[in-house]
Length: 81
Image 1 (tube, rainbow, N blue to C red):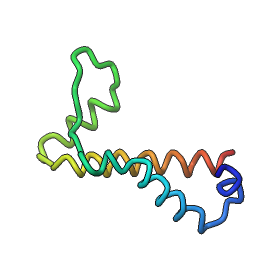
Image 2: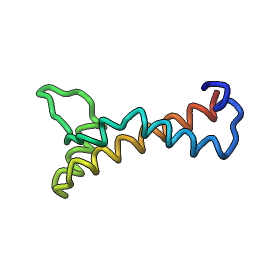
Image 3: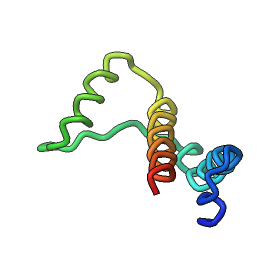
Image 4: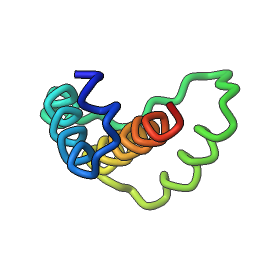
């Protein structure tokens, strides 16, 4: 599987999305909203929650945002390596 993504072909991005959705199928099947823990020290995470909380978005939106962030990290990591 790693050999496929090392080719850096444009079609591999589509395969990566499909593969990622299959791996995260349970996350899409039973979405859950964000969880705040007391004493969280993650400033970007708390800022993002403070920014999105007044919008009263359904849990699936948070799931999609997390999947998109994971996908962007994977594609950026693929470009670097």
